[in-house]
Image 1 (tube, one colour):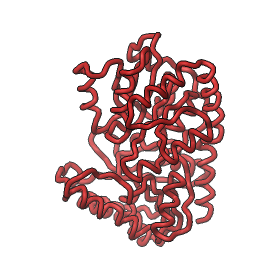
Image 2 (spheres, rainbow, N blue to C red):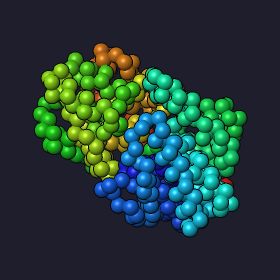
Image 3 (tube, rainbow, N blue to C red):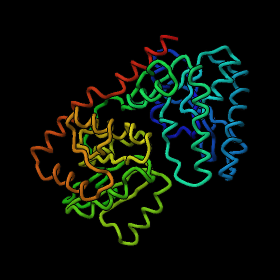
Image 4 (cartoon, helix red, strand yellow):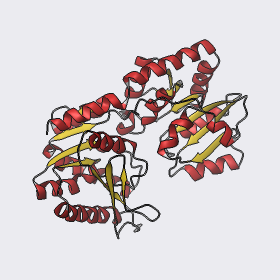
Length: 375
């Protein structure tokens, strides 16, 4: 299984690798090494090898990514000669070229796991962004028809992939947590010293533009007796922390990233989950963020964007309210609607727990095993 990250918080690949190892497959995850992280380790029945790239510290925005990809592919090729595998599972399009050359070397099978809609990503503006937008999806265009199995993360992305590349409908494997008993926790309130009289509104995930975080923070200013917590790391974290320090935003906390294993206890210590992905690109419009299901498993109601996939699931499960993720007043109204009526709030909690019985990794992992059985 190939990833182009450090493999420290990749929940989907961890669950897939664990599931495959549990039924007897010999699984190795190839990731990227960086200082402070072990190079080789065993996790939950599978092995992790982090490859050292000499080009990784390079900062040239235009030239360094393709050079890094080439070096990564070369190392995967070499490793494929020393430790041949029967299946190469490419996570995201940027690992497809490396997976393909390993497949050819060992006459193996190729699984492509599309975590994003590559043709629908948002790279912003400017010449470099335009160039990236043009070339980013080429690995997918070149290799997706050569994959023996294609997996993806939402029905809308499945439909787009089938239409774009004239392939059979890929299998959808949702990014759901494992169904486990999550005990009540008071962790966020205790660690952040949040007053007992405030309800805790939680956003967890990447702290970047396009996730509705700024709109959420502005909405918190419009609602009394609530505190907002943004749990995670990302390119916008320091900027948002500065706005809290300046006094622009009150009753907001940005503690940073927490270990994946600790996340459920933080989630369950909140009163309301926030999923306000903004419609800035097709990739966002068709996404189903992990956090949506993580809130359900924690038994907390949800305030979410009115986007096709997210809105559909909220409507079907009756687990919260949808609103315009660009409008702080609409978000504040949705928050007040849920928190002001205890009977409604309690019903949403019950519905969230019921939804977790349908949206869980025990069911989604079975789909993965069924697909591997076809190989």
